[in-house]
Amino acid sequence: MAPTPWKGLADTSQRAQRSPRQSSHISTSRNQEAQMPPIHTCIPSNYPQPSKPQQPLDVAVFACLTTTFYSIVRLGEFTVSTIRDFNPKKHITRANMSDTTNHNGLMVTKFHLPRTKCSPIEGEDTYWAVQDSPTNPKEALENNFCMNAT
Picture 1 (cartoon, helix red, strand yellow):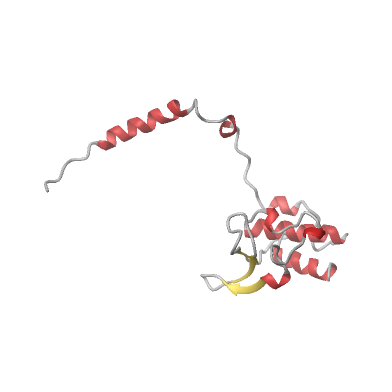
Picture 2 (cartoon, rainbow, N blue to C red):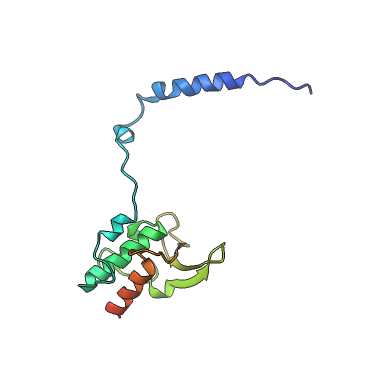
């Protein structure tokens, strides 16, 4: 079989240039909205700091905020709508936490979420590492366990 020159490159770039203009009529206004600014560690630090606990609820919310922020999960996967809705087969408990090492040999905290939006049957694992900042999730979670011991 003799090699055949590929002439698709010029055609592909022409199609790529035409695509945005031709597809603009099918995009929704939602896609055309301005992008949100990126989330930075200053956002969790605006909440009451774990080093200055004032109310048990503040400490619990801060622990949840830092855990979900650093483990990059949906807030609803770590929270329950009401305490009556809590089900240990569906929601995370202390038993679903463990310390392990990551692929670089560094210590991380592992959370097994029994059920997630993407994996409703098997659940998923998520991780965070200790942070050298006022928003350290390990310190926030330990403060929560001390103040809100069950």
